[in-house]
Length: 215
Image 1 (cartoon, rainbow, N blue to C red):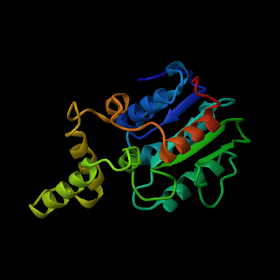
Image 2: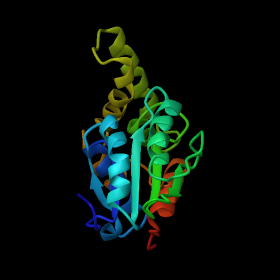
Image 3: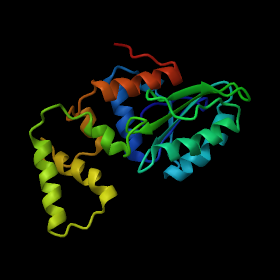
Image 4: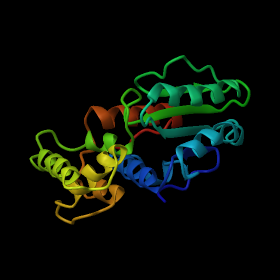
């Protein structure tokens, strides 16, 4: 795990892929690894939602963030998060801001942030965010998309919702060191660390945790 922040600065994510992808992206952007909050991985979107109230109380006077996959319904995901935020004194809008949400719990004095992968608007998950970090015009990406389409025609068993993950892993299989995990692939610079998607996420992180890149 990157970072060794105290319990007063925690970032809840769904799993290890999120932890390592986010951690290595922040390091690439110049954030001191020791300034990255401690990651908490409840194991699923449902469990991250359940952790919102407890996480805010535990971080009294500090900062806590929650990163959730939007999946098929970003608005429903936000409404589930927003209702929990309001129950602990956070003023949450009807719709999540396109730049992500941050605010303060009046009950506990906790600075709180919520980000919906990939970009607080589209359906999808971490994989869609990472696809946005692939350099524009990359020649292998459309080839991977065609390979995935053809694989489905030939009876590949992954479902529609798993297609973005299959696409990304296919693309990663054709890099210098095939099959690297997301975080390692970011560290190896297979993905870009700048551009609209990365910039927006890092700005949200800075607003929630008050951490600025050193470079």
